[in-house]
Amino acid sequence: MDSSGSFRAAFEGALIDACGNPISPRTIEANIELTSDTVSDDLFCGTARGATTKPAPLPLAGSTFGAVRLPEGVMPADVDPASSCPPADGMD
Image 1 (spheres, rainbow, N blue to C red):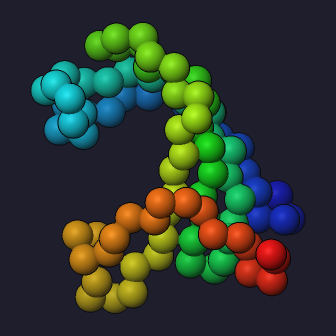
Image 2 (cartoon, rainbow, N blue to C red):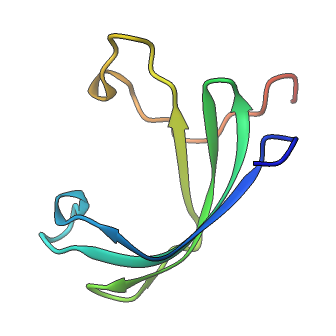
Image 3 (cartoon, rainbow, N blue to C red):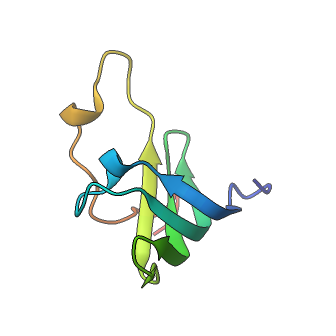
């Protein structure tokens, strides 16, 4: 992470367990590069690029991701996923 809160992370041969595959019960293998910005102390989001290699080669271009800190006692199922990344604190 740099001083502005941005980071890049690359994952060659990343494995996603079959239970994380919503389409078929097969493990996903992918080469992924994440580029992210910290939006607040509790949220970061960004873009993903690369491609899956197994079970089928598919591009990840246009994919997005995010992570939010959950308050103590709040479960992930209790939070609605964001449809977009909000602007960083203090930015329009």
